[in-house]
View (cartoon, rainbow, N blue to C red):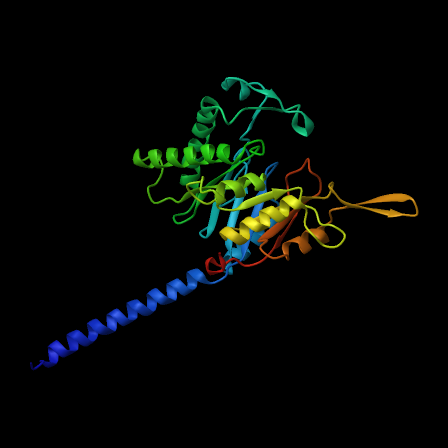
Length: 318
C-alpha cells in the first residue's frame, strides 16, 4: 500500500495530536498528585482576622488549597478563585427561643454556651430533617457566592454526642438532599458540595473504617488541641491525625490560649502551662497535620494565627 504525502501528513499530525494530549494528560495527572499545602482561614464569632485573610489569598496565589470557613451571620469576605467556601451551622445545638422553637424538643446545653444554646437530638429523624433543610438553604446561598470550580461545604457543629451510625445518618441524608436540590436546579449541577468532620474523631474514624459514610469529609477539625511537655499531641488530636494519614484528608487543629496544655510540679508547687502560639506552630509541623489555628480564648472562635502544616498528596494515602 502506497501513502500519499497528504495522507502521511494527516496521520503524522494526528499522531502528534495524540502525543500532545497524552503528555497533557500525564502532566495534569502529575499536577493533581503534586503535594499541596492547605490554608484554613476561619472565624465563627466575627469576620476572619485580616492577617489570616491576607495569608489565605497569598497561599492560594502560590498554589495552596484554600478553605474559607465562616459563620454566614457575619459578612463573608470575597471568595476568589481557588478558595473553597465552608459555611457554619450550630448543628446539634439550637439558639434559645426562635431557633429552638422549630424543633420537637430541646434540652439544656450547660457549660459555656448554656445561656445562648440548647441541645437537640440529631438521631431523631424529624429534628435532623429541619437541620438539613437549613443546610440546603446555606449551600444554595454559598453556590451563588463561590466562584465556579470552588467547593461549597458545611461545617456542622456539636456532633460530638453522635456515634458512628448517627454521623452517617446526618451526612448521608445531607448529601442525598443535595442531589435532590441539584435535580430541581436549586444548586448548580456542577457544584461540588461536601461536609466537614468536626471534633468527635473516634466516631468519625469508626464511620469511615466501617464504610458507613457515602463520601469522605472535606477535612477534619479537632478543637482544644494540646501539646504535652515532651511534644506529643493529645489523644483526640492523634486520632484525627490517623484519619488524615489513612484517608488523605486535611486535618486542622484548633488551639486556645486559655487551655491548659500541661502542669509542671516544682518543689511541691504546681504551675500550669497554657497553649501558646509557639506550641500551635509546633503542632502544625507534626506529620499528617495540615495546619493549626490559635485563638486567645475558647470563648472567641476567632483565630489570630494560622500555621500551615504538611503538604497533602493523594498518592500518599494508604
